[in-house]
Image (cartoon, rainbow, N blue to C red):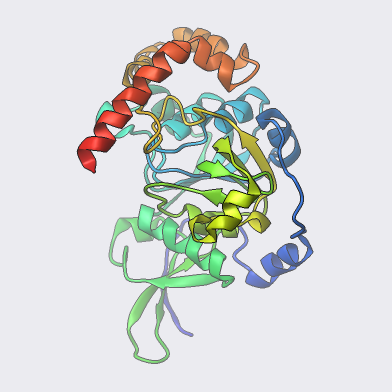
Length: 330
């Protein structure tokens, strides 16, 4: 197959499908209980130098508890997929967790504004960057989930995004049509927050999933946090609701309100006051350091973080707000 052009961006993960298949061939698919704490999951499955992917979409259904724990445990030199990434990116930048980045959507928290600290970190020269789009990264995850080294796409050609990516322009051997070949991403580890899971890792998600179902199948190690554990009998009662199967999963952590201060469809609204507080304190590096000490480093877990920011009183208000919005949408 002829390569007509290629970008100058780095490829931070090995797209070799046969090497990935060799890894997954040895991964256990036994139906065994995987319940543990977030602290235990990060200690066991997240390592310095790993390539990391975080699930969710914007501030929706992000595994905040895992992001905090990665920062708390001091992980460094990781690669990261900046795919539909908002508050999760903000947290990881606070800990300078990664130094290699596949960038699509970062720094911005959508309508809330830009993260001053994330911007400082990205402008510091400490991070190697390869440019993509959200769709390009979705295609790369889909290639990995399908077990192939690349997928063709019809975007980014003729743009500077292509120039600074690691994609290649190829010619279709059947039609002669030009496509952008997107190399597969097999994350070393991924974290995804879901609505419900059983002890084995069978997961249910309500609402938008973006690329999470492909990420779950592409990741070599997968940490699931869930709003609640449910019985395996409930999973078996209607398997059609299971969108991530147990054999993809390495850890299951029950973390009610685990996306806070992000939102969770049908469960609770985002804490916009607290997200604005993050953006405000980041303007002063010294004040932000004190903020991190209070909200991450001095907290033993996600529940202590919540208690420091309004506790159940705040969460019940966010829950009520989400119910009102869900009713209006429905």
